[in-house]
Length: 182
Image 1 (cartoon, one colour):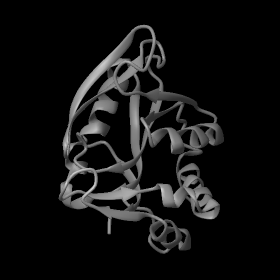
Image 2 (tube, one colour):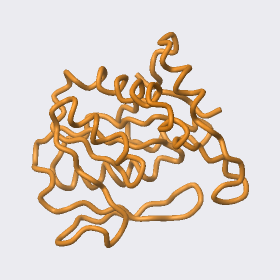
Image 3 (cartoon, one colour):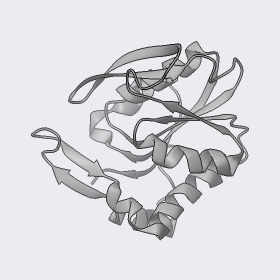
Image 4 (cartoon, one colour):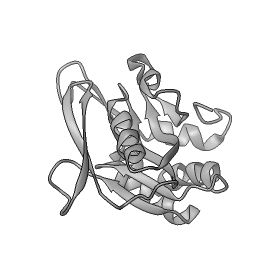
């Protein structure tokens, strides 16, 4: 499944709480701002509930959240489904040994790191972020988890920008999103 059931009344409430900010952080970018979603407790709870309903019976053992907004959605999902939460961080934010993966964004490049030993071989992982644009960040996250021996079951995002075709870069991995960008 790619987009949550549009007939679910919670989707409209979630979509209406996402603010679009033109030309941020660079000219030509239509930034999808989820901070306005977080200001509405019902819409925020509905967002988490929709993910939990999808993943509670999929035997997920790891929820990997991408810095920074994946840290907002990932932990409550992990707690609700009985999985551990693994933060995927920007460079030099984690002490000790790390796996490192560089990737391209729609407006630059970046890097993700994960602690060595945070994920064990054979674990079933869900990657969580707020948005998929070009897919570079999700691909980097999947690469980190797979290098550690995890099976990435699915990627989950609140928002998808379909025009940027990020889904096509996910090597056939399922992607579940709640709303498409406006």
